[in-house]
Length: 444
Figure 1 (spheres, one colour):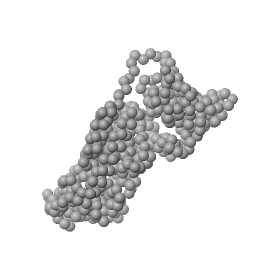
Figure 2: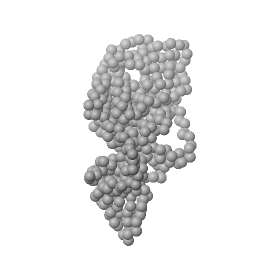
Figure 3: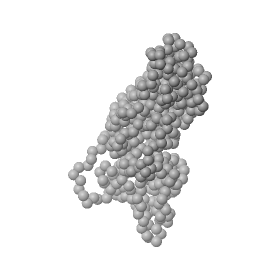
Figure 4: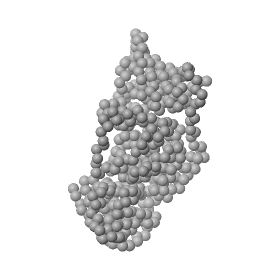
């Protein structure tokens, strides 16, 4: 039976190192280990050109090479006869591998040491199964992907979401069902600061709302920057390298930083960008304690789910921008006579309540604006429309994503049990609950 690269998809997950053998012009052999080989298409593979000077020189002198791949699921080995075709230092293939490498090395703390210089493209002439001296009694079962009916039902649920909160909850639940994992995050894009901010989480014990990842940082940020799905399917090696590189040093504490929740013992991670027409909306992130939790089929299913969710989110935001609502002028709640000290730092719009950090950026401006209106006008309900028309908020004139920003703020206030809460009063109307007497102070 003729083997194809598609049948060897698990071999390209980087779980077990591959081996490439080349010969110099005089016939001297050379063997090098490869951390990752990428399938380009049905007839080509790509190998990162970093530290393999001898291998690179050999394939320039003698274009033939032999690659040994190992399936991490079964231990089966495959020998590929290759012919070197070209070197790439830019373009889609290079960018894809560059982002994957940067995301991986960011886990190890060696981002300044390891940089992708170029990519070698090889044509695959033949694939041979390598006979094993050991007989296997059983091949580990591979979890089957979802049926088309299941995926259709999930995308239909996503299309019917009526709010960002409803949509994100459905997206995370269905994504976890698709992949058999329990932990997921949805991060929304805040283009003003070039960051992704966590708006919803599932499966974590620690609160996540407000945790940020910079565009281009780690797996999530790199996936967002390249608008492409990135995944790790064996984090154990990266974690060991990272611990060695950092010396086990503790992370620097920043009073204006909320840490992303972490799954202890995570072995697999995947980040799928949410976008429409090239515009980044956010990222869906999942992780699992299982190795190889996110194969190519799982990634394709998640991408289909995320595409529908992205379209629905755009519609939800558009519908929200047209809703006027009926303003309800009720008295702002003050359940106790205590004073709430609210400090606002102008340079990043970060907000602290009684010395505890709440949020920053647009969400911070939103919170302060609502509190000021409640104090000045004696009411606690606000419509999306009036919020959008507020000049002081400096919301973007196009695509302000107000629905997701309000959700992020509401969940952050709830997660940390702050004495101020933001609740959905009815469609297009938010209610502010204040337990105390706010006193706002601005600082530089």
